[in-house]
Length: 140
Ligand code: CMP
Image 1 (tube, protein in one colour):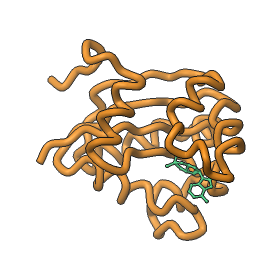
Image 2: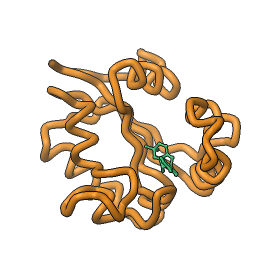
Image 3: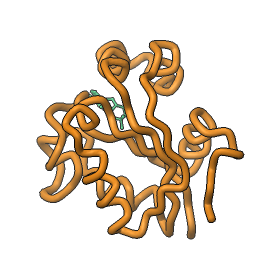
Image 4: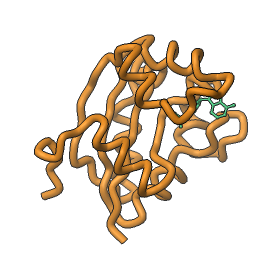
């Protein structure tokens, strides 16, 4: 089915100047960028985006990293978009990410892991709404 997913190119990958290379991977796999914005997240924005992880031991480091520089946030649309994007990204820990995935190629650590992608339809809807009012999404 056609799905939408939220993708974030994290501060490490933006600093490495690989936004275009990552966009090319999305497009080559049939994912369409239907909304995008570059932003430097505030502490509040990063904490609320990652609210589900609030009790995890890595929460503070994660938030600190996510506000360390600009990020590129986009909505990807396509057949099976959520899984497709997660396959393109590779495992959360870049050490465990399969060869040829975004994280294997561009990530340095579990926090500086280049990209985020929604993990399920419910979280995708919440995450998209977090950054994009519907009038800023351009599916056609
Ligand atoms: P992301 O997909 O953005 O979702 C939460 C982030 O927390 C994850 O990618 C990692 O960058 C970061 N993180 C740090 N430590 C861990 C951990 N032990 N397990 C999962 N995520 C972690």
